[in-house]
Image (cartoon, rainbow, N blue to C red; front, top):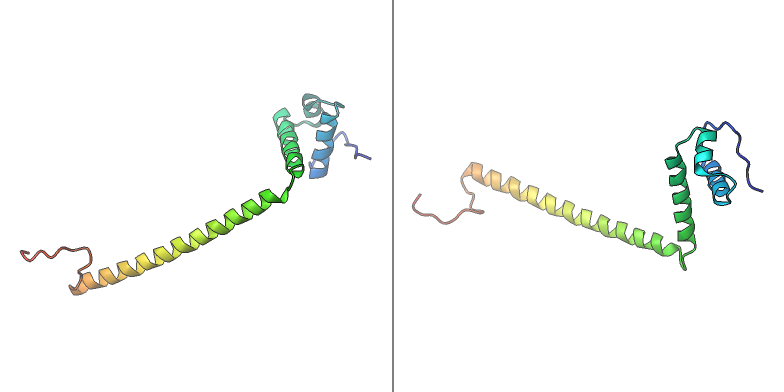
Length: 118
C-alpha cells in the first residue's frame, strides 16, 4: 500500500517525495497540480522525478555495482595522485629552503650559470 500524502506537508522526506513522484508517474496528478496543492515549484517536483527515474535506471543495469566500483577506483586514483603531489610539494619546499639557506651563506649554485666574469 502506497503512503497517502497529507494536504499540508512541512518536511518533504524521501518517502514523501517518492510517493508524490509515483502519483505523477501513475497519472493520478501532474507536477503542476501537485505544486499548487503542496505549495511547491513545478521545477522542484520535476527534479525529484528525474532523480527518481535516474536511480531506477541505475538499479536496472546488468550490474548496478559497476558504477560504484568505478567511482571507488577513481577515488583511489585521485587519493594516490594527491599523495604524489603532496610528496612533490614537500620535496620542492625542502629544496627551496636549502637554496635560500645557500643564498644567504653565498654557496648557492643551483640554477646559476658558471659566469666567471661577475
